Image (cartoon, rainbow, N blue to C red):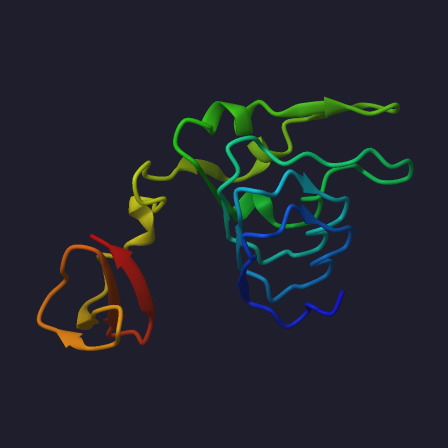
Length: 171
């Protein structure tokens, strides 16, 4: 994989499959956003991405993994998922928690349930309340065309925090 330097990525909506070894050994990767159309996450896609801490998956049904002899048939092996939060669409929590499948060698039980936690996103916005960090101070707000505003408005807002981070928030 040539993706070793990525710290975070939002995959394009046109993606339907995350290929084998796509992010393999990327220890810099901390966040990934997976679009709703992804139905397959191939073997070892996130192998050894040990700093992963946030996965947002918009697929209502958990993406599956093709069964290949000689592989663990779990794309999240070594991904650090035990420390990561998985964000899923509202109403799909049980699908992700209890997702499993059978290989010729064994039953792969609940690969998504091994995440530290699974959180449902807000139905209307697709944003979890935990994305908003109220512990840091806002220093400025902007509208979608980059004009500074006095406060947040209805719709999309760009928020700049004292710690230097910037977030997009829908109000």
